[in-house]
Length: 376
Image 1 (tube, one colour):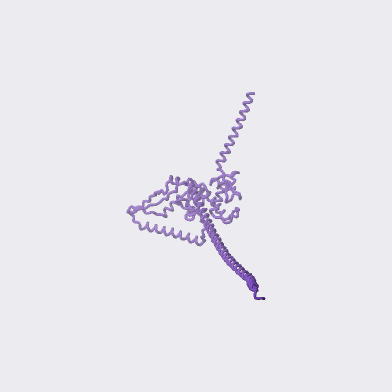
Image 2 (cartoon, helix red, strand yellow):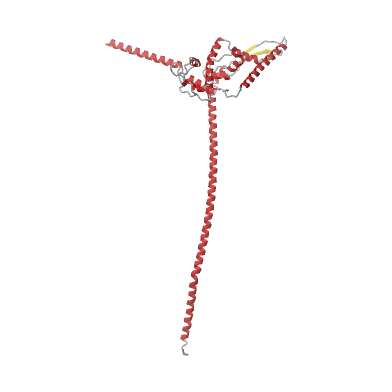
């Protein structure tokens, strides 16, 4: 190059600078893609880690919620079970109260009488003998005590035995209490001894003996339940017939009419006992109690029968005749009342009324024929 060529030297330097810049840009472009890829991957990994943490948190919450729901379900089931048990218990108690209320209403209205069944008591033969001996020894001691009192009583003491009848119940009040099938209980005859001070000594044993001597079977009983109650338990204010039989034997029924009436009643009582002791003979369940046997005979009286060829609501006397003449059938014995029949007198009245209407109809027909003949 010559000395006058300064411009070409400057252009040459610029070309060198441009080449350096291009080299720098190439290097930067070669290094940038690697940095961007690493940052993106880091960001993606962070997001994935966050998503994974959120999923684990949600999974834990779902598990906790499932456990809570299961506990709530079990607790609710237990509460429902307790409520159901308490409701069943309350339902049973209400049913028992209804049954008791029904019995009370039936007793107050006179439809039935309270009847205690002593057949299930566990009394052995030895216990019965012990009780009988104790009763006899007690009566002997009472007799000796009375004899000693009579021997030691001064002669000047008054011995006026006042046979006063103490009225325990008023007849009108008894009827007012809705007991139409019963009379007022006979008052016990109490023997009073007037001592020197004017006081009365009551001899309870003599009172019981007098009551037994003057006891008469109730003629106003209408149902088998009342009859069984009089025999096994005793009516209001009266001893039971069983107690009289055990203590006095047949001596308490000295009149012939009383003995005949007692025999009729005993025929029904023996049928009740036979039904209780031999239920299979009558096609009844084996667990037959005295109360159920009484109900069977009462159902026979009310309509489970063919008295005089048709179902009849019998009286106790008609029931005795039905059993004494062996008119009863195996199908008459049942715990269920199949037919609540009408009394015999109502059936006879309807029969006579029907016959009377037929006779009147035949007379009217004959009168009509006579009138027609006269007109012709």
